[in-house]
Image (cartoon, rainbow over all chains, first blue to last red; front, side):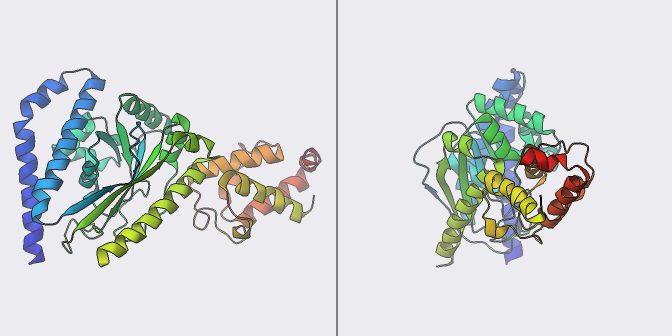
Amino acid sequence: MIFLRSTAFWFLTLLFMVIYWLVLALPVFVILCLPTGRRQHLLRVLLLGFGLLEVRIVWRIFFKVSFRDLSGGLREPGIVIVNHRAATDAFLISVLGLSMAQTVNGWPMRLPVIGWMAHWAGYLDITGWSYEKLKGRAQKILEAGDMIASYPEGTRSEGKKMNPFHSGIFQVAKELEVPVYMLCIAGNQFMPDRKFRFREFRDLAVRFLEPVPKEEVRECPTAYVLKKKVFRRMEEELAEMDEELEK
Amino acid sequence: MNREEIIKAVNSIFIERFEMDESELTPEKRIADDLQLDSLDIVDMIVGLQQRFKINLRENKEIRNVRTLDDVYNLFEQLIREHPEIAEKLQ
């Protein structure tokens, strides 16, 4: 039964992806002819629309995603730190409704269609680029008014426990003096697993926490202190979310 | 400068720059696995040590091989033995 549901999930997800980008093929072609900054921003908006429709319409057949905004309304361009349990996180962050560039390892940008779009939208290759290049590109995205979503665990944790954070993106936040937002996603540790198989289908929870304002980011003596602060806050919230999901 | 003073000086970097508690800083602690410093944090640590001990560690090959806090203490103990002026500058 789970195998059939899993197959149906991927079939509908991919089918919707093909339909969405086919319908938008002409606008995408026009957008690709625009100057880099404009092109990247518009593609990020289209990617946001794609993610939102997948999560809110296609995936609703299989599970529900509840979203709570505890951020207090600050939307100044900054870095959104996201915990990373499964591949679905890259779509789930769209429930925020903010156009964002994500940091990715090189391989997702080589995936057909969605990977090309991410590449053209200026997604950041966190493992393939030098620190200076990453910071320069991040600065341009933030100046364009968009956010950057990053998964500092580096890889999917596939469990409730977060992997230790890498400091790179926190160093970028410190040097660019931008707020650090926190997005917690709970429930999807096996949706799907590392082999892209769903081991269960259950409702998920997403929470957008109160950010670390830029003044506080600036005051942190090192990126390590900032990452520790963010890690602890997210760990606390995720424990609460997991507990609520178990009820 | 005795070993105790070296430990105190090294630990002060971890307390000031990484806001670690002194009780966490025991010699067997592994810098990467236990204290969770990644490569970028280790650069921060080296910068802090350079400033504290007023020495240049850029050419030092031993610093790249430190794994535990005890390795850091031993390295500075050895450096001070070889270059007593480091301790003089600290006082």
